[in-house]
Length: 111
Length: 111
DNA sequence: CTTATTTTCTCTAGATCGTAGAGAAAGTCG
DNA sequence: CGACTTTCTCTACGATCTAGAGAAAATAAG
Image 1 (cartoon, rainbow over the protein chains, first blue to last red):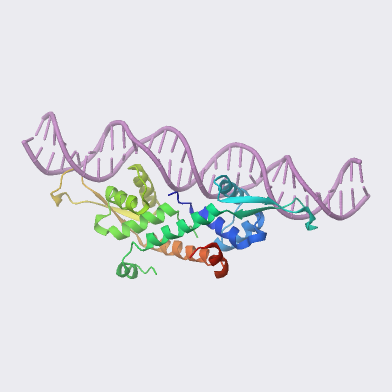
Image 2: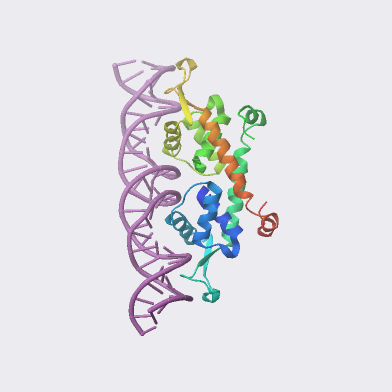
């Protein structure tokens, strides 16, 4: 049972959401919008490529037929293992928060 | 907006739950039960003490009147800042998963 | 064809966080 | 006091995150 980090979970989910648009710099925009935090270029590619190495993402080179300026894009696509680990992360998260009995949760002003 | 890591979130929640029993080795038991993973002694104390340094936890020395063998226990207690950051972590988590439109979520077999 | 321009990605060094366990510390018991 | 028990301190190493300079790969211009 190998739970991923928060960053990894976020990147996997953003890749799922963006689908055909899931390439590095677009992913960065999404992540910045989501967190309200600035991310450097490496701040996205380094963890993304780690996810590839771990088998949770794969890549496809963009078609040069796109009639677009600049270097071709590299799309990230989630794998079956990636989906599996996302499910695990989510159920882990739920188990975590279910630790707290409801009265305590209210007392702390969580919920 | 300074989001904590998964380990930090887990430790804060376990401390909340254990209340008067929230000392190092007991926390370790709880974390092992929760994750099904083995944790070394340092594997709990290092992140716990980091949380203290960040102001999300404080400590209280255990009473020696406890009539118990061995070195006194050090209790961890969550601070107001700790509760705040837990709330942030949770709402961040929800925002993350709300990225996925429901049809896509079903298609991937998440939920 | 060669050079400029645009867009995206690669690389790697430093900071932060997680993992691991040996041994010190602080009590009680004999 | 010395042995025993329980809990904590310390620190080194590996993994992950952060940051940005510059390379790469395409099209556009001369």
